[in-house]
Length: 157
Image (tube, rainbow, N blue to C red; front, side, top):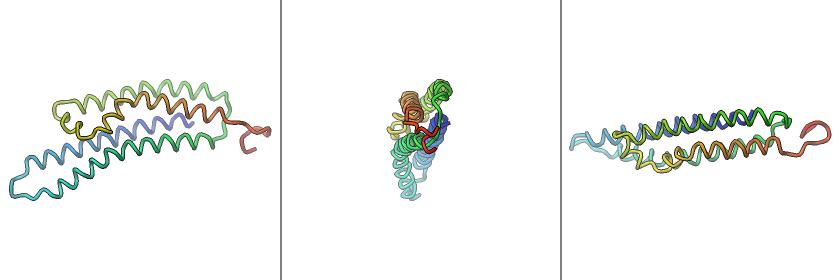
């Protein structure tokens, strides 16, 4: 069921978002506590890579959502399963809210607040994660169950 794809999107966003946050925090802490004679160019490159990962997380989540919509169009389905898809969506929206709150609590804590400010795309993504989940879940359901059926009993049959 392609509605479950949004569950994957939620967990992938959490993993990538927390990885970027923790990675940037670790590199920033090491750089701040490095002795003066230690070269920090490698740490600067790592911090630039994680800043790039910040934008990549937003692009990745968007592409996963778009590919889910495309794949939903290719799946043979029956409109009866729309109710199941609707119930799965109703379960995923609170899950997205919980994941959003988890990231928000970690990102706004005293230790990570400065780091989270350097990752604006990820923070914005998690701020709107429940809304993104709701919109894309319903789009997937509409695409999956609203496509024209052929007379043979299925789209391809």
